Length: 120
Length: 108
Image (cartoon, rainbow over all chains, first blue to last red; front, top):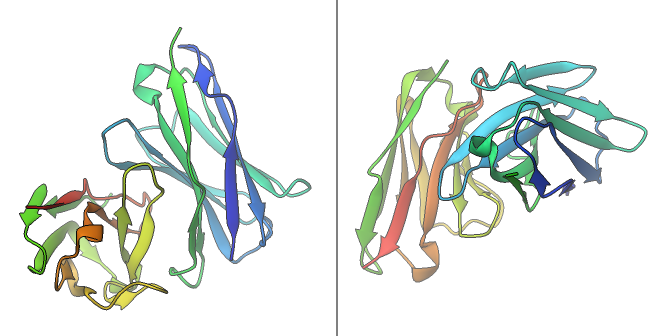
């Protein structure tokens, strides 16, 4: 079973860059077997898919965030990361990292989520 | 870009009643790539149904999924108090992998 854990600052100032890391256990981020995803949830709101990274640099981002977001992988540390630039209060949310099987959609695993607040 | 619309927004039922949740897609979605999640407060979403109709590991058989094309349904045959949660559909057939806006299930 894949295990994921988010880490990063809980507070980011407006206009700055939000950076989060997801540490993966029991799978390799360099594998062809999984998509590596970021999802967020603003307080009291629904789930918003941010994007994914797949094997050797294939990425896809939510068009609403595309100009500000990037997802990258560090195979040496078995981590993947989210970078979101020029943040505003609207980016305050719980951020989840998650994996989804490339061939088996039911291979679906989530981290517990981390709250990021954008405030001065 | 595929948009998913869930209805109703809130479902309030008595224990033992049947809950029927709808997820409608703006264009056809291959069933293999339609999933349902349950999310309780303070928790990460939990996969309930994959492939539109297949229960994920450990999910009670009172949960079932059906549908094809643009119309999908999640049914809870006999509502239990522990089923109080938000329920989301998601398609992963075509990026961006949008979620529906969710249905809140409450106990009367």
